[in-house]
Length: 237
Image 1 (cartoon, rainbow, N blue to C red):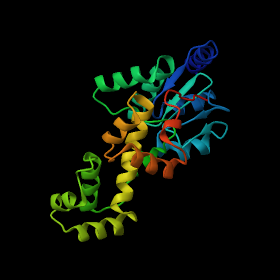
Image 2 (tube, one colour; image 1 turned 90 degrees about the vertical axis):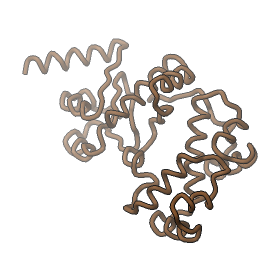
Image 3 (tube, rainbow, N blue to C red; image 1 turned 60 degrees about the vertical axis):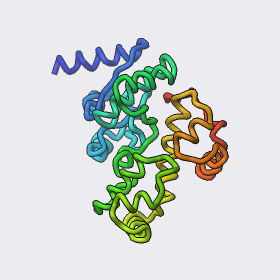
């Protein structure tokens, strides 16, 4: 009991003297047990969120964030979220390009934004149990180029275009084009946040025929032109 009290006092001192405390996955429950998360925004692995909210009501557990920074304490939703959290710190202390270069060196995707729902990270586009539709989603995600058409997708799945379109719609509630635009725009957002590519270069990498087409689809989703996005900012509450 004395050791736990000493640890609590030590962590509290650290977070009030300019240093930060990082917890990954269920480690946040330890801080919550110590009362160090009282009044703070935080998160924990998604399976523990209900438990955490019930047992530690003074802490502000968020299920709409992969990681959270509040008053000297960083918490993340899971093991891989810890990587995103670390890259976010690099970006905070340096700049987005350094963070992107480290991600590339580690052979991982450009870091995910903190404001993502934990469950949606792996359920988006895949919340069904049809193997063919899942394979179609993977093929679309791996073939963003405009030259990869519905005809190519149908051929890869050994189905007719009409069959795959109907199958996709019945299991996901979306058209194939709606999914493609979501995947492309998510990729475009990562590029906008983490690179110095031009809108034309980003449009090309996302599979759009022109910057104008990319901007039109982007504006329909976000309500403003992509060039108005703040490329090198990251808010830590």
